[in-house]
Length: 569
Image (cartoon, rainbow, N blue to C red):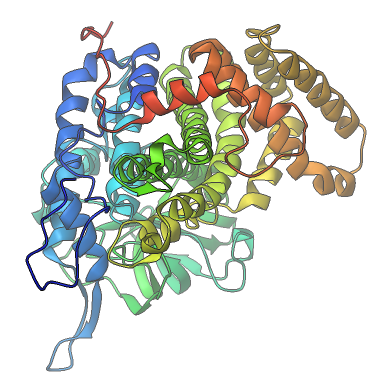
């Protein structure tokens, strides 16, 4: 940034400071993302991704992200005459972000383009880019996207609603679903007495006479995100056990369904998203799937939201490192710009390396989702590695966001910058949609019930055998851990689960980088994450050549060489 000449008598000279990162292309400036999309069959979406990336890097969009969080949603439970209305008012910036995401198809692209190779890859890249800008509105976008497989457990309801769910024109109006071309879908699982243990839920569902599949639900939901959605998938108890229901905000006769908002949650992050606590007072809902099989029905939705959590955390990392590099290129200290200082270069490159591994993991899971109906290995990898990635990538984001703030210095903790928001958002994804311990239990469950998931995982690692000595040693170590766990009792398995999951996740990332990234990048990952030297802080890379490569690939001012657009098969 050009320094401004100080007028005579002025005491406050503004120099040696950076400006805001804006006017860049969030896709074209991200070499790691461009590479991932291309190799996993998303080349047909190049032009759409490029246009979307330009919009997300525009000053106006970044301003909307700030406004949507600076002016969070407000709840009005009653109108001034005392009538129950349960309305939430959002800043118009929030609605503009919703329109942008839905117009791009982030809420349904893979279901629109059934069996189109790379559809999950292209959508996954878009959601990760949008998470760099604003994560809160991504909650209803993600839930709407993830609802389709669960809704299809009741085919007649899916037939009636799917076109509305996939419609790209955002409609925030407070009207019955029958009057709207476009609807959004939320989810209500958590109750205060159960938390992640959803089988402890106490909400009761009673079948209504003469209405096949229609129930009345009475109970309390401790956490319902995006309560202005038009439809919610919820869990409630029936005589057969915990079951899944689709609960609309309006009944078919046009009357308000008694799903009453008690309060909005005062969250440290995700401020633009109106998470709420609600009570259901004989609220009508259609049963989805078999009675007593609620968890099995809704788990498909949960799995896809976990996939988006991973992509959101990767996007958070990308936003942090891009802004940090932008800042350090303009700020000087000790006689040189920060980007030229060896210590800072090592830290920035290490942060970029963490992102490279995170986006490689997310893109590989997107490719597995695209291919899971045609490939047994991809189906098994999607089952196992989504939990691994949700655990590991999401947990790496808070520490990553903090280190970015330290790169910026004192101004990095100021609320008028993006950095505190990135830090607060970073802690959300590790907790939502199943915390770390829940992901570890899910991994143990998958290994126990579907041992073939380990065969698929080890086969994926075998593709890069010999790629690095530390990687080969790591593969042998994880095989030993798996073998020891197989003969252990449940208590021992759970006690050791976090160590195993971390081993498996870091090795999977190493395999992907060995296979697809520049060799210096893969060697840096294996040397810093697998060599076992005990160094744990960012900025401990040993290879200066790797630092050069990583900084060049991560610089938001450098646009990647986009490969020619390819048609989908």
